[in-house]
Image (cartoon, rainbow over all chains, first blue to last red; front, side, top):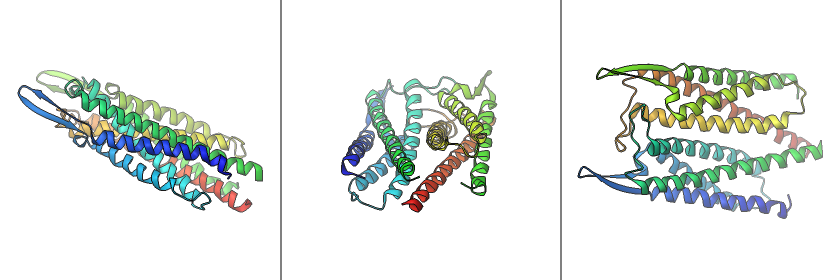
Length: 162
Length: 162
């Protein structure tokens, strides 16, 4: 593939790397505390298994994104990269969905289950977490676009050679 | 592609269709009620946006799975099917992750947020929902396998023709 054709994918990967690093850092640094009835309680990402999962997956995606950026241009590993992109997209997709589901309960509560919203008490925590989730969504969309781009290239090659 | 080669994929699609239909039906029919302090309350899937999302996505995946089963063998739509499989896998992945995140809070609660577990009160609801989520996970794994199978075929074709 020509160099000119590879530049858009490189830029997309760079943006995705930035997005997953941002998601990881913003989620890890999110914390807030509130005092209710003289009891101070803190909220941080590690209080929720879903948010911990979000951080772990985004950290893995960041590591992967960094490695792929430095793969040589003419590398026979592209088949591996196609499958790895698929795995990373699926993991990111899963982590943002789990985090968003919990974030929704945090913001709106669930009256049927008796779960009260907590974002009124710890708004800084919720804003950070929301920012991290949006960053994760951007990364997931980019990996999805990269997959479509790769499939398009593979299928086009087929059409030319068929 | 020969007929013999297509049979495993057909069987996988059949199982995936069964799994998404099961996930939809089991989640929709899940309900239970409990009486606490003389107040009776019911639990059903539509109480949670995440579980509603789960039902909608599994229903869409069922419809898609049914259509693809009846596509003619020699059909030029296979490129569309590859991309559609990717979209369906991503949607299923997202829906099981969101439902599982909520299901986990239902079972274990979250002491930091003050959310109490509800599965002790409505065990039948929780068992149904868990069964539906497991069925959804099976469907997601099968779509992932189908994607790998398709990619393998495409890449092999490339290798032969290159």
